Length: 182
Image 1 (cartoon, rainbow, N blue to C red):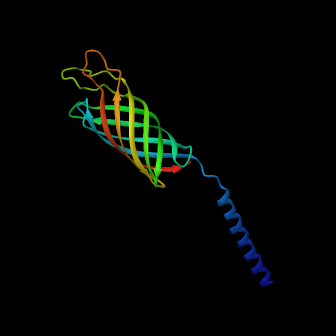
Image 2 (cartoon, one colour):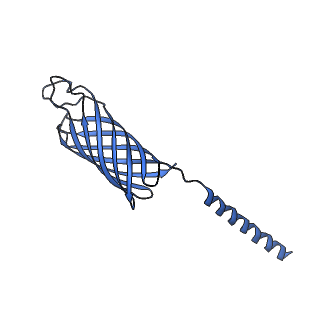
Image 3 (cartoon, helix red, strand yellow):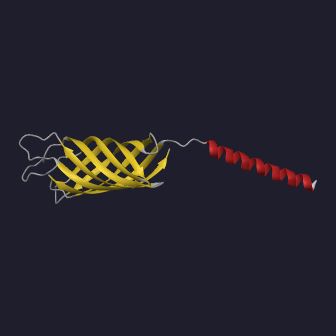
């Protein structure tokens, strides 16, 4: 009886290990990834604000081990002196081209929707009216299993209003994100 019980326990453990290994080997790897990141940046020209902070979410679809498509959105807050501030919601489509060992080049294009008037002109009660900006953004980065670090230049242009100063500007930004497979 004791030998039969030991044999039954050993057989159950062996079956469990075999089934568990078979599942692990046949489970497909999802090409989808989702990441949440913190953003910071320094503006290079065009506006009084010199600093940007924000957060973004990125959905990534891996077409292959070396190329992925991305969809990024979130919120940027451009911080300035006194009333000189602006919020912007970016919505960008892009790609990542991996060049080896987790390093990649990226490119994004999309729209930026201003959330408040931007007070760049003195003695103007409402500031420059809200507009929608064209966003173009080349960059490079490093992606590990769960972490993604990237540096990019972002250009915001378009929809300048008559009688206002040029509101096109650029930014150098850093993104640190945590991502996981879906």
